[in-house]
Length: 261
Length: 258
Image (tube, rainbow over all chains, first blue to last red; front, side):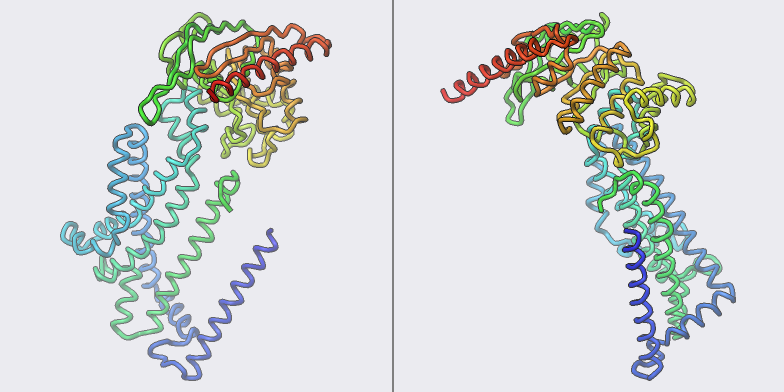
C-alpha cells in the first residue's frame, strides 16, 4: 500500500516535470509570446526576487491571515449553529433553509452588497470568506448529524449523558468525516472568495494581499510576477492539502477507520 | 429485582393506524438471574427490551427496578446491541471502557477508571488489545469489548438484544459461556433476546417464549439443568421449546391464509 502511494507520488512529480519542461521549451523557442506566457524559469526568478524584497511575503501573510480569521469565525459560528440545532430541533429547519438559499450563492456575487454594508475593509473580506465557508460547513455538518449511526446516540442516552457531553464526547467525533469534508470545501471556497475580493477591493491596509499583488502586476503588464502570484497560490493550496488536511485526516478518521476509501 | 407489570406498548404507523406491539406483559426477574426471550420476528422481543431500558415509553404499565419506577434510560440498566459498531470508533478498546466510567462519574479518578477497565478487559480476554481501535478488531472481539464496557459500569441489569447473532458458531459459543460467567462473577441480572433455542438453553436460567400480534408472553420454561452436565435434559427442553415455536408458526401461517 505504502509502496503504491509513493510510486503514485513519483508519477505525479514526473508528469509535473514534463509539463514544466514543455512550458519552458515552447516559450524559449518562441512558439508562444513571452509577454503572454513567460518561461517557467523567469517566473521562478521573479518569485524569488519578489520574496527577497519582502513585500510579497507580507502580502502572502496578509492573505493567509485574513483567510484564517474568516475560517476561525466560520468555525465558531458553525459550532454555535450545530449546538443550537441539536438542542432545539425546530432551528434545524431554519438553518437548512438558509443553507439551501446561500450555499449555491457565489461569494463574488454578493461583493457589491458587502461593500455597501461593510465598506472596503478587512471586515468586509472576512464577511465574504465567512459566507463562502459557513454554509458549506454547516451543510456538511448537518448531513453528518443526520447520517450519524443512531447506536452512538443511544449509547450516550443509556449512560444518561447531559446534552453538553453528548455534543462534545459523541456527536462532534462521530461526524468528524463530515467536518473534514466541510473544511476541505470551505477552504477552496475561501481562497476563491478572498482572491476575487482582493482584486475587486484593491489595496486594504498598506500592502494588500496576494489577489491585489496579481492584479497590480497585471496592471504593469509584468507577466512573470502575475504567474509568480499564481504559483504561490498553487503552492499554498498543495501544502495545506498535503500537510494540514492529510495529517488531520490521518490522525483522526483514518486512524479510527471512519474514512471511506 | 426487575418487575414488569401490565406493560402495554403500541406504535402509530405511517398511515395513522395503531399497531399493538406488547400486550399485558408481566415478568419478574430475580437478582442474578439470566432470562432469555425467544420468539419469531415481530413478537415484540426487541420492543420489550427497549421499553425496559427506557428508550421507548410504555402506553401503560410499570417497570420497577429494585422496587423503583424506571422511566428514563440510566446507566444502571444497560443495553447491548447486536451491531458490531456500537463501540466508539475514535477511542481505543481501553478508551471505550474508560470513557463511560468518567463521563458518568461512576469513578472519579482516571487511575481508578483505568484500573477497573483493565480488570474487566482481562475478564473478557482482551488484555493484549487494549490499545487497538475497534476497526482493527474482529466481530467477536468487538462484542467482548462491549461486554467489558458494560460490566465496568456495574449495572444492575444488562439487556442484550441478540448480542451474538452476527457471529460465527465457534465465537458465539465461547461468548455465550463467557457472558454467562462474567454475569455470575459480577452479580449482574440479565435479560436477553435471542433467535436461537440453543443460545437460550446455554445462557438462560429461564426461557420465555413470546407470541406475536400483539406481542405477549406465551410460556415460561425453567432451565434448571443449565448448570448440570445433563445433556439429555437440555435436549428435551430444546425440543419442547422448538415444538412450541413450530406450533406457533403454523398457526400464524394458517391465520394468514384464512
